[in-house]
Image (cartoon, rainbow, N blue to C red):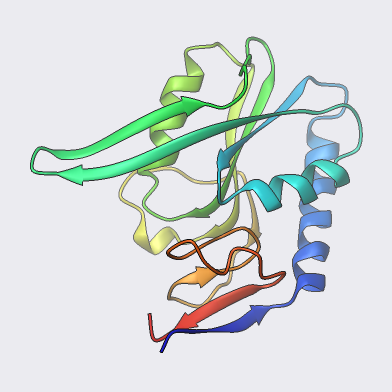
Length: 172
């Protein structure tokens, strides 16, 4: 039986997001800032982060899906909102940055809009699993246990995304 075990409490997540929000506020003070959240996993992260960044900030939504077949990996990109980044500083929000493939694909496509800067913000970073050289500029939770994480918007088989903390699935 698969059961979730909390590894990071909601209060600890909130404190770390507040700290990252302060760093982003300082780094982008007086600049046009756009957060681009990757659906669905980064939605809860976006909601919390956008509220702790001081100053004006826009946010956009993008869905990036990855599928493997006989010919290799296929990545599909769907803009859920009208993403306009020309001249803006853009931060891509990702729930878990592991292989870097999806992030690299999105960076490549968004760079065509000529943003002033384009970086990644990860809720969780797993650099040991990296296949593409992508390093998040900001990481909320750098130390996380190995295994399947759920909660705080991250789902497994359509479940457990509503858990307020971050949980490790045992038995998955």
